[in-house]
Image (cartoon, rainbow, N blue to C red; front, side, top):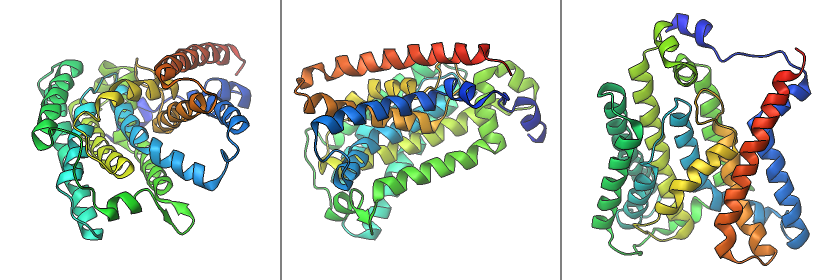
Length: 331
């Protein structure tokens, strides 16, 4: 794949700083997040406290990890619906098959990552090597995983070890553990983007035929992306258990639409080839912050979905307008 980098590298436009900012979906979602934070601070006196910051990180991390995984597939112009099933299965497995202590947490992590990798490998094989549509394949694996979650735990409950619930949502010194996890994922993504595999993911989304002609191993890149996405879903399920201190076989249902909403808000286009994990993870944080904002201003929780949908539409429209404006700016 040595020739791939030069031929399929994501284009870099030498635009003025303003043009680059206007064309950046990440910049847009950051602006929306800051706006919501200002509103939240006006109604919540401790909105900017360290405790609130840590709480927001913990509550938003499961969705952020799931959105990061989904972004890898969307960048290739695919869809991965198995996220809901993997999260549910990892959630109940963590709540029922974990032991206390550091070694117990590591074994649980290995278990949920293994489950995610297995589901991702099945998805990747069916899409990359069997040539099936990603929506159909991942819908099937989502249903299978959801059914398996019900077999493991037929009702909310379980017994989450204190080491998992306390340490994964706590601090190391003054640094929240969820922040460390987010930083690790983003650093890993920054490194991956500079490899042939990362370039291949973008190349497939931009033009799969051109990518194949340029020497990108299309099947292997697809398989790799689905596997990595599945692993992130598994970790998201474990973090959800740590946050809620409970296992729920239906936990993944609410994440299905929220994952794609976070991806869209974060600036990753569903036509593939444009976006990244940073924007999607901030998009997830934005959706979770919106819930707090609506609650703080006295809006019923029944309207949360409406608010999330409006934010998603606004973000997509503003991003499209900004990108068009940026393209019209002089080089």
